[in-house]
Structure formats: structure tokens, C-alpha cells
Length: 429
Ligand SMILES: NC(=O)N[C@@H](CC(=O)O)C(=O)O
Ligand SMILES: [Zn+2]
Ligand SMILES: [Zn+2]
Image (cartoon, rainbow, N blue to C red; front, side, top):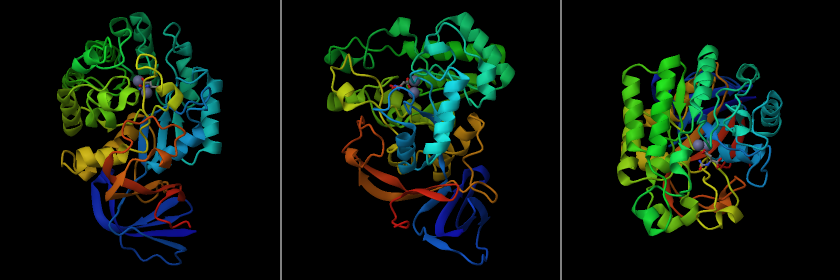
């Protein structure tokens, strides 16, 4: 089976390729790029006006299996990823049980292989049960396929334990992904501590809660030589701490989430609990700092932190509703609307932050579009204007503050190993 994608603008950030070119796929692999004569094509996809990019890579998703299939399963999460243009994802371990044993890790990876249309990778927990008390068998989990270690949802607070985990990670040369939140400082708030939290009678989440742990973990990385990846950076000083540590050679990377480069805490006045996320939406100054971090490379990657929750849970009062929002199906629209169209990032820079850079951080082979690669390919329509519609979500959950918002830019076709897993061009009809 040979497929030809013709007339599209092919972008491969890895080698700065950005040209109108043909892409030929055979048996799930890319066999040619450029205007080459290829015989016996079975299927032609006309990508005129579209971008042909490496399948997108999201290194921060919550697929809720095992434990919370009513929120998301690995197969519904994968369908949501495909609809958003993502072909590879890294799952977070705060499931039930948490991904803290080889057995649970293997369950997630196997279910991903058997039931998901996209490539499902997984992190493993740093501590058993994400309780911050006993380190997991990091080496065994690493050998079984864990690509990073994290207690995402929490920070491990015991410095002796954190130090030990960083030493082990350095030995294995595997990145630690850090959710930065000093919960002794932060305690019970739901929103960024400021005018909006006051107005809504919420105790608020002080920015220092995030910054203290970013600073701490940078020091641990510096001391041990481990690779540190800071998740969902939301504050201006957080970005600055990463910038300074990079300049002195610490092996640190950072990610920015679409909601943190597009929304402020004021969104809670409009969207209520749908705008409750951890770390919280902050101020205009913070949003600008996250964008500046993405622009100058302090924040290496864009990652969604796709965090599905049921409408029942989100229907509770602000203080009781869970933190998190779905993100896979709005990430491309938000990246184009807030970063590419306003010319903060070039096309190649934006695609790099959604493909090759996150892939490298986690040591994956995804995120490239070159001869010999797996045909994981996404077709994007950068000009497509659309309105976020909860009913159209492939995710099981609808907890998004972006519902009803108009965005410009969308994934229209997603392919994994040459197989179409999402199609709104009507080519598989
Ligand atoms: N981001 C969130 O607000 N929630 C995440 C946990 C996390 O990423 O910290 C979740 O699992 O729901
Ligand atoms: Zn987190
Ligand atoms: Zn998360």
C-alpha cells in the first residue's frame, strides 16, 4: 500500500525543512520526501493549503486508566490525542493504582498497544502511591519502559527522598518530571492568590508554592547531574529561575501549557470551576512571561496536561471541584491563535515545540518527518477557523474553559504508522 500526500507544505523542524513537497508512504514508513517519481500509488491525499508535519508529541497527559474510566480510558484518550493531531503521548502516573509497579506500567503500555490508535508511552511514579514516602523501584520501572519519573499532581516534599531520586535518575540518565508545588505553603486554595481569588472568597494559591520547588529541584539537578523537566510552568519568576539555571549549564528543560499562555485567573469569573487547574491560571504578566519563555527557548516544549474530569465533579463548588482541564483537542488551535498567528513563534519553532523537542526530552523516537521514519504524520490547516464544541470532543470529558471560543488553526488528518487515525478531510469515507 503506497500513499502519496501531495501539494502540502512539509515542515520538519529537525533539519529546518519547510517546502511544498510530496510525501510518499509505504508499509507504514515514509519512503520519499520531495518531488520524486514514485510508481504505483494506491492512494493520493491532496494537502494543498495544508501543513504536513511530524505527528505531534504530548509529553504530559492523564488518561485515568487504571482507576477512573468514567473520566477517560486509554482508548478514549488516544482518540482525543488523534483528533488534536497528536500521535505520541506520555501518560502521567496518578491513576488508581498509581503507575508505581512494573505490573501496572506494563498494563498501561500493553493497553496502549492493543487499544490505542496513537503511541502511548508512560511515566512512572517517583514514590509508591504518590504518597511521597517510599521511592519506587526506579531501575526496574525504567527497564520496563518508563520514560520519566514524576509524582505529578504533587511534589515529593521530603528532601532526602528527592535527593535520592535525583541520584538514581542521574545514574539511569532518565529525566525527572517535576510538578512544582509546596503543599505545606499552598494548602487549600483553588485559584491564583490575587484579586480574583479574593473576589470569589478563595484562600488562593501563592505563586511562591510553585517557585520554591522549581528552585529546589534545580539545585537537586545541579548537585546530582540529573536531567530535570519542569512541568506546566505558570509564573514569571518560575520561568526566570529556569532561564538562569540553563545559562549556568544545569540540565533543565521546561514546558508551557496552552492554558498558561492563553488565559489569566480572570477566566474563573467566566468559566468557574472549568478554569480551576493546577498550577492555577495566573496574571497577565505571568502569561506574557510564559510566552517569552517559549519564545527564547527557556520553555522548550508545549505540553497539554490533558486532565479529564467528569461534569459532576466540575459541578461542585469551587473549593471541592478537582483541578484540571482537557487539552489535547484545543492545543493546536491555541498554539496557532496565541503564538503563531500573532508571530510570537515561527511555524517551525511552534512545530518543534510540539514534536522533536518534547520527543528528545523524553528520549522517544517520535517527532520527525524524514525518509525511513514511521509515517506518524499530521496535516494541519493553519487558517481554519472553528469554535470549540464540547459535543465534538473525542475525550470522554468536557471540562474545558475553551468551549465556545473561536480559534484559528486545526489538525485535519492524523496518521500513525501510515494508518489514518483521525480524518476530517473525508478521505477515508
Ligand atoms: N493539572 C491539574 O490540574 N490536574 C492534574 C494533575 C496535575 O497535572 O498536577 C490531574 O491529574 O487532574
Ligand atoms: Zn501537575
Ligand atoms: Zn498533569
